[in-house]
Image 1 (tube, rainbow, N blue to C red):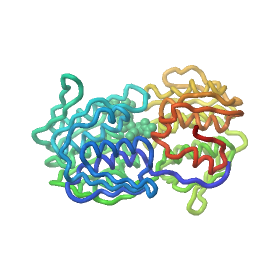
Image 2 (image 1 turned 90 degrees about the horizontal axis):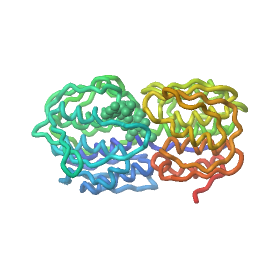
Image 3 (image 1 turned 90 degrees about the vertical axis):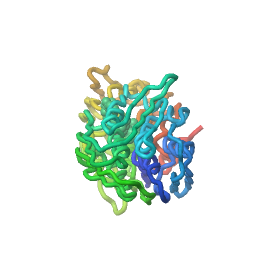
Length: 409
Ligand code: EPU
């Protein structure tokens, strides 16, 4: 593979920002570099169903949202059932209306994915969290008062949700053991432009001082480090030499170090980052963990690389209890992966991968299938593309630009 491609805007930063637009009772929220991925498009539909005006220019990737006049606090079930990030609408609705109702949330099937940190935090702020006969959860508060909250594990959307609920609470709030992902820092940058008083984003302790109201603001979404990771791995697994625009290396330290251990060259090249894959990849050990550790979202992809590496790789998933579903897919390509034990698998490389017919089970498992397909001899069919489209925009077009042969049927 060779050529140049551009990384998309971050899905996981855009989603909480779209939710945060609900907090503005004056002015419009203008977001640039909003990626046209399915989860983001559905999130915009949720905003519309709540009564917001949403104008998304898909070519310019700019979204203009006006939520000043909304009155609805019930989230539309048929949309929230499609992605887990719909949880993120509860925080701002609770902040603004002191009430939010949600039925069911969907999303990637990568474990039980509990929601206790979110609801426990809302309760600490003074909300009652009630299961409703006939289904759904009603979160209601007479008033919201600043509180001390914590996450047992540093939860990404948990922090974002609790920050949004706290912005309009009375007094000071603090979230301990917060996640420190770059998307949270970017999201808080937007909130601060909207008038929120939030300190400590990017650290394990986030503090919020409640304000009377928030106004719309303009912001450019950060580049997507997970999309960058997929493109970098596409260059690496094909022994390619590619240039990528929009790779923020500061967000990918551990991942980049792992690629380098595998023999991949990563270097700055003007505006771009150049990624050059070796003839034969070296095996590695990977343990996923919270930021700034190795991202769980890039674990399926690096496992695809390990399949063709010259030796045994050890890959352990510690963030989600069931994020090894792609092992089955990789075996279909001819990879030799040990049975899972305590969320650890041993990948016996090198395997000669052969084209296969596989089903993308979630966004990142779909990415692993794309990578294996690029390295495999013969044709590969990836089904259930909806999953991949939830997180990566026009992936076939961008990979074709790098010389890969693939088409959407
Ligand atoms: N957890 C709980 N209780 C909660 C919340 C989380 O026990 O109330 C646990 C989870 O089970 C997990 C850990 O805490 O073991 C961390 O989960 P987290 O809450 O951070 O995950 P998330 O916020 O639901 C976000 C991303 C995921 C990404 C994870 C981990 C968004 C919209 N989603 O999910 O992205 O895998 O953080 O970094 O930001 C993806 O983009 O493909 C994706 C799944």
